[in-house]
Image (cartoon, rainbow, N blue to C red):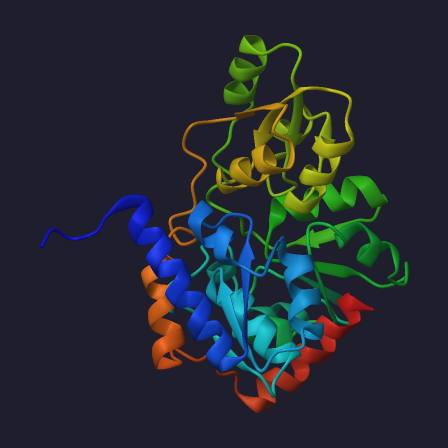
Length: 308
């Protein structure tokens, strides 16, 4: 008998996932950059801040996190009593790997009295060395809340840190890390798409290079981009972030047009999660995310300050 493929297979897998989810009392959280079929079976789709808030407050014993490793770690830290499953354990993050707990600890010794602000795209070990965590959507608020007489070390994204410094007027000491997807977007590429679509507004993520941000009409997290597109009277937009958001934008605004700022804005780690892997992780209840208590306790303080 020929193997079922395409839409029929997706429907079959979706039904299996729903049954397993009900059996285990699970909730599925997915990032905007996930594949469309993953977002379709998710109970909640959001950006890093929205997912962290949801993980902290969701009323379920099992969280299936369709994202990358640091996101699932954060969910476990915020909800240690819950079972947190990551369908693809090898789903990492280039940016998160740019900093280590040891490295941040050493840098802190070089800057006495510094406040360490760490972007949520980081490991639990790095968060444990931090005073407060931020996301792209609340980084400006976080930095504005800090005492002005103390130096601020911003880890690990230099582009986001540069943007926050410009918006707050604070002098930040920037860690030399970046997102390999956003940092690869060039001003020349944005200009070429803008020339082809002159009426389109340019929306970019603050992980982009400063010269790209300078070309934008709007700079925000993925959740912020969705809100801006919904509320804007404009009908066309150039989108400077990972291509997974395009599906969510089109779903939210079916009467509007969205153009990627470049054709190669794809995070391979975000695409590792498949319906088969979600089904398998619910069947086997693994891989489960664990964070060492000594690390989790310190990281939880930094994450809680962000949510506050």
